[in-house]
Amino acid sequence: MREGLEELERELRDFAAKYLAVLHGTLSDINLVSSGLKSNKELFYFSQVLDSVYPLFRGKSESLNAIKSCGVVVDVGFGGGFPLLPLGLILPEEIKIIGIESISKKVVAVEKIMEELKFEREIKLINNRLENIEFDRDVVILFKAVGNVNDCLSKIRVSNGKRIFVFFYKGPNFYDKENLSVIKSNNANWDLLEEYKYTITTGKDGDLIERLFLGFERNNKRNKKCSKSGPIGPEFLKISQFL
Ligand SMILES: C[S@@+](CC[C@H](N)C(=O)[O-])C[C@H]1O[C@@H](n2cnc3c(N)ncnc32)[C@H](O)[C@@H]1O
View 1 (cartoon, rainbow, N blue to C red):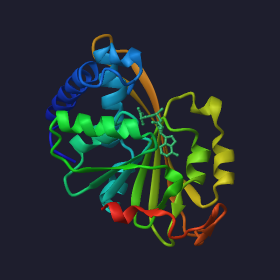
View 2: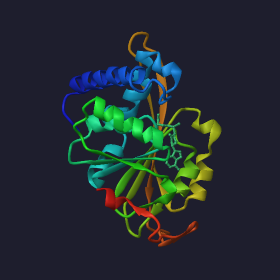
View 3: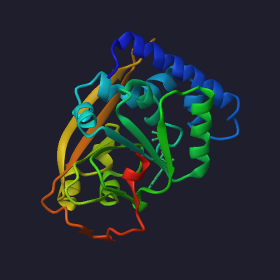
View 4: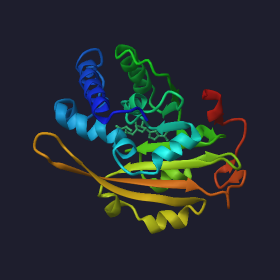
């Protein structure tokens, strides 16, 4: 993690302003973020940019240690670049960052944003679906606003013996929509690592944004080469080829 919270927050603010400028300029014809966020700078900064990195650099989540020990972080379903791009600003250079996104026009748009913002940090973008990827090395996988936990976990293909951590950015309504006991019993090859609740206080009026960060770790107990959804084979893209 880079030093100096204040300096980092200035950088994140600067990133947010430049990102919105690109959205209102070159990329005005594509809906990368909701119109509500696009027109409200403060809300965009707190609920999209700061929220992307908060559990790692302000919070007490296990995710940062997991990222440091694996050395690779993969953002699945990065959409308009979240948490992918803010992570690129705060994580040390030695951590490799990869994004996977199924919609090609979003991938092209995020490439354009990195180019216009003169992003120096290397971030690899994969235009594909999670279902087609095999995780053949130790990685941390992040999902922010991508479907439900049960579906996401069941789509992750892991090579034998690899250490895989998965973290989900969720809101407090997670408990109304999903059931942690059911998730645990359906996914015996994943251990719940953390259930971390936190609030982000927004600037001017001090409104609170409630968040939940859920972490899982693959256990090797039932991590057989053949999974429910079929054997891992050459037709899957290996994540290691993007490193
Ligand atoms: C609601 S958006 C969230 C975007 C971003 N993570 C954010 O928080 O702003 C969900 C994104 O996940 C992508 N997505 C959904 N399922 C996917 C899959 N199986 N593989 C890759 N991308 C997927 C969608 O195309 C979409 O861009």
